[in-house]
Image (cartoon, rainbow, N blue to C red; front, top):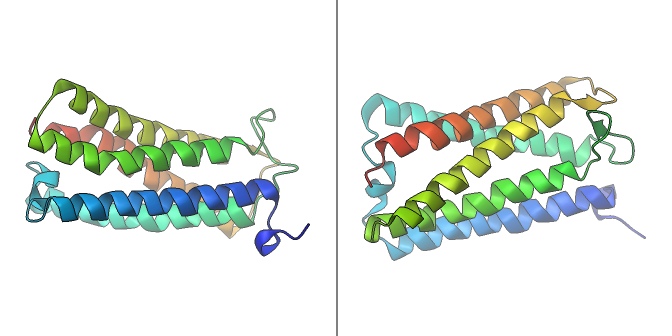
Length: 184
């Protein structure tokens, strides 16, 4: 059976999760912004000035970092032999991607819903999806650091560095800083 780009079937699953999940995230952003034209500023809450500039740079770094660790997972790992903590199989990576992408696709629609009609249930939903993304990103960092056999080389260390950058952005900035500035 021919495989997509010579990829292992488990890596193909990861690829499709990223394609479908990535499209879902982008569509959720586009459709939410189109449905609430002129109200994109509300997404920032009271984040302004230097913090907003820092946040913007961090978002760009996190996006680039996502590609670094995804490249490594899709094209440099061997799902047949790699383990996390010498017991968890490659299947941990599709699970992490699902958690990140599904939760990310829910954030903007929930945030606009909160702005339109604030409710504690929506706020809990927003905080939950942000926490899921951040914790899944932390799991990704841990998984990459706990791989055995331990990979070496530039691609691995770029993946580790990228996962740390992504984790800092999603867990700290999105999960802890942004909610403090969002008016409920």
